[in-house]
Length: 107
Picture 1 (tube, rainbow, N blue to C red):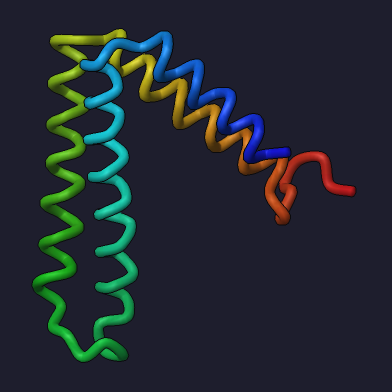
Picture 2 (spheres, rainbow, N blue to C red):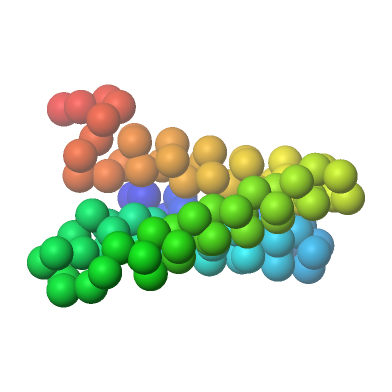
């Protein structure tokens, strides 16, 4: 069910948003995913056998880039920022309602 709802929301997004909004969302998603990968790499650096500098700098520079993107969109294209926030909110709500963890509406 969650896949159907997410697919419907994705279809609405790509048909209602212009290419600028879609590319801004893709950039934001890439940066957040890259940061989400670097943070656990920093935490697990001993098990991975890597130093602390690369994952920490990766996380910090990625989050800085994401904040610059958000600030740029705030000053130049608030509609894109609104769409990005709406997509993230929708995705979080779908995860909370339909995932196996079912944080909301537990059975």
